[in-house]
Structure formats: structure tokens, C-alpha cells
Image (cartoon, rainbow, N blue to C red; front, side, top):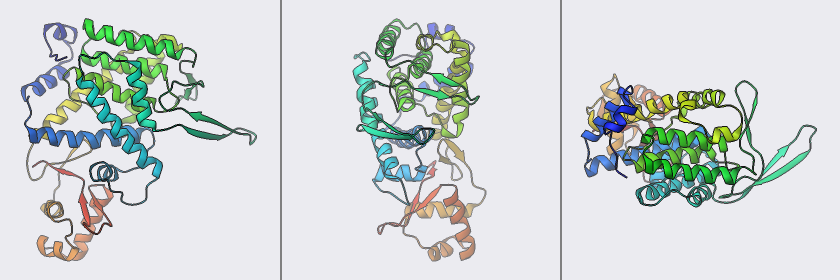
Length: 371
């Protein structure tokens, strides 16, 4: 379903100049050449997998995520659960992208459950110690709707309940039916449709685990079907994301079925947050593809500039020759060993480079050069 901002969408979003202008700039550089598509795809793969999992507590660093997903390597200590979770999430991302391309197919609950099963991989048991020392446990079922009530404690200390297990099947059926009808009717812009689906889905919280990751995958499923670039909710901006959802919850009300059927005007705070997020991600993608120069680099969605040309020389050298020794760097850069070591430590601390213990290479440059 290829859509652009025609007059219908312009009228509905006339005040959203930033988003409109960003989207039109994006359309103006289409189609991308093969090299640009590959660069953007590689960047998105790492950014999205890292951030969506990091929001939920995955401990892999950005550099570890890149080495794992692109090269199948693990550096430093990492929890096996986090490694397997990240790999499964990447499989889910690829599965979502394939399905999004089948634009003639309607969305189904089966697809959402299959996506959940891919993310969780298998059933597993959670063990808890209740007040008084009583031990309890329950099983998380991959690909199955919840069998236990779920809730969240807000930052104000209140317990916020999601849809009950009994309500969930009917509400999910309604959500998917609503989405397919809304997509066909074009009642909403693609960005509004994605935001409203995300909000309604989260208020149902149909699974016992993985709901946030599914919601963010489904947002990109919707945007991709409507010819938008996919977006990343950055973990460093998690507070703004959750606060926008929470503020909308206060307006919609606490009843789960009201949340699962929330109208667009009741989630205006989340919608405004989401529209700006989409605009910012589009602008960043354009800058990533078009802003070039020796001093322009990118790391997790942010443009990075270095004051010292020595830093750029070090990075370029390690990119081209990962086995370069400190002594060789001293000769190439023309500064002493202590200064080289200091710069390397600073780059490692920021996550821009990773020092590996693989025999075939010593350094991996994570930060991306603009050219």
C-alpha cells in the first residue's frame, strides 16, 4: 500500500509542518541506491534491536549487539539469556519486514502470536518469593495469550491493570479487525494509525511477557506498509516514551476496555510524541545518508564530531587494519604511546570501538563513518 501526503492527509495534518516537511524530503530522495539502502538497513538493524531490547532490560552493549548480529561473535561477558533474546528479536524483525511487504494480506492475530513465539523462543518458568518467604512459580507461554492478570506499577506507586485474560481474546480480535478496516478506509494517516494501534495494543497487554517489543515491531510493520521508513524508540529517551503513554492513560481512564478502544483525540499526548518521533527519525535518516565529511560520524542515532584529527586517524586506521598495534598507531598518528592509550580508552568507554580477543582481529570500530 503505497501512500504519500496527498491533499487528504495534508488537511488532517496541516499543523504538523515538521513531519510533513520531513516526509516530503524523504520522498524526494527516493529511490535510494543500493549502497544507501544497505547502509541504512545495517544501521537500523543494530539501532532497533539494541534499543528495543535495552528498554526492557537487556544488558548487551551497542557494540556487543553489532558484533553478535552482524558477525555472530561475542565479546566480553554476556548473559546467555540476553544473547539469545537479541538473536531472536532480530529474527522477529526480519519476519515482520517480510510480512509487511505482503501488502495485499490483512493483519491477523495468528501473525502477532507467531511473532511473539519467535521472540520468546520457548515456554519458560518464572520463580517468585512472596512476602513471608512463600515460593511460587508460573509459566510464560510463547505465542499464547496470557493466562494470568498483568499490571504495572506507575511512577506514582499506583497499580495499573491491563485487560484480563478473559477479556484478551475478544479485545485482540477487535483490535485486528479495527486495524484492517481503518487501513482500508484511510480514516487515519499512517502515523496516526501506528500510534493508535500501539496505544490500544499496550492497554490490552495480551501476553505475559514481550508486549513492549511486539508493540514496537508492529509500529514498524504499519509504517513500512505505508511507505514510511522504520523508526527506533531510543532507550536513552525511554522516560519521554513511557510518560507520553502514561499521560494518555490518565485521559483515557483506567478501564482496560476503554483503553483498548481509545479514540484518537484521547491519546493526543502520545500521538504528538509519536509524530515528532517519526519526524526526528526521518530527518536523522536523511542526514545519515546525505551529510558527509571526515569529521562526521554516527553512533546509535546521533551525529558525532571529533575535535582532534588524531582521533579520526585512529578510527580510520582501525577500520582498515583491525590488527594495528599501539606501536604502529604511534607511528601513524605521530603521538606517544601514553596519548594513544588514553584516546583508545576514551573511545572504548564511549562504546565507539570494541577490543576483541579474537585471533583474527583486535579492534572493531562500532561508530560509523559518514563516508
